[in-house]
Amino acid sequence: MNMENQTIPQKSKFSSTFALLVIPICLAVSILVFIFVFGASSNFQADGKPVPGNYLGIVHEGGVIVPVLLSFFLMVITFSVERFITIQQAYGSGSLDNFVRKIKSFLSTNDVASAIQVCEEQKGSLGNVTLAVLKKYKSVAADKSLSKDQKQVSIQKELEEATSLELPILEKNLTILATLASVATLVGLLGTVIGMIKAFAALAASGTPNAEHLASGISEALINTALGIASSAFAIVFYNLFTSKIDTLTYSIDEVGFSINQNFAANHKEKESTVLA
Figure 1: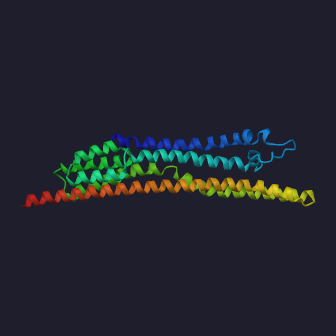
Figure 2: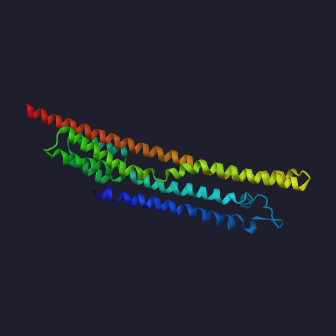
Figure 3: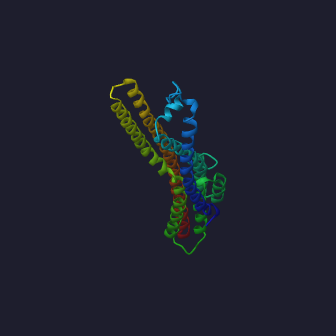
């Protein structure tokens, strides 16, 4: 196993540990912000109502669901930044299109050594996978004990193994973003329903209809919906963005793998034809 593949378990372990740490930290930070920032005395009047136009105090009136929703929003931002950095590193140091063109160009002239050098310069998931396959290419090409079919199967197996090691790292924590996209909206609606229940309960207890109090209660209840929808919207956008980037990288890996297999088949066929002649 080469050095690039040895770092895969370490990256996976880091991603898992990162997720376990981020979730409670975001929740703790959200509770502190809710109490000491949104709940600061300067945001409220003497009667306990938010200062007119002070949105921090208005958000605080959303209730205990607010810090939960705020933690969801912080998780979305944190995991999105982490995934962005990871996927950018997976792309390597140069353009994917240029890398694929260079590999195809060198393979067309059977210059495997130059192709390997390009992989070492590119790095990233695509560079690592291609490097592993090209090394296997050189190894089986020099092995006289294997048949043509066995050599191609060996190259294809190396491609699949290298890809299976790299891609799961890219998809790590994306399930958290997908979950937050659904759960944030539902929790926001839950907070709204609870707020509406409290608003109408207070209205019933007073015995006299008060449009001002009812409107205030409803607006406070809708704060939870707004926070939930905002968190969900960001999660959906980032999830789709990262999924698209991973699909592009996967397509490039498949394209390079196909070119390597085709090149090996063509060169091997030419050698067989030369021997028969």
